[in-house]
Image (tube, rainbow, N blue to C red; front, side):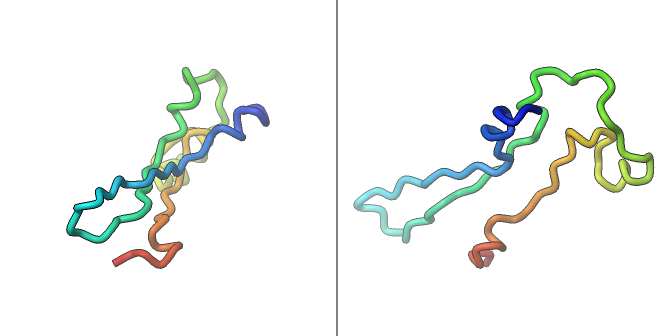
Amino acid sequence: MSQKERCHFTPMKTYDVYHGPFDPCPPIGHKYYSTPPHLYMGFQPRCLEQFPIREALFRGTLWKELYDPYENPYRKRGELR
């Protein structure tokens, strides 16, 4: 991935939930969702670097470029209930 492509790739996205003026519930604030790396590849290139077999089973993918660990954004900010 080139430097220019890396700038646009963010695995964690966020959006603000609409809160109407007559909504009786308190506002939710930000919502987060994760996007997998294969969405930004277009197609799978040849000769991608691979994890060793045991590590690939642990990580859930054979290719290092497709590995995307999940980090809970709510836990970081202390919003996890």
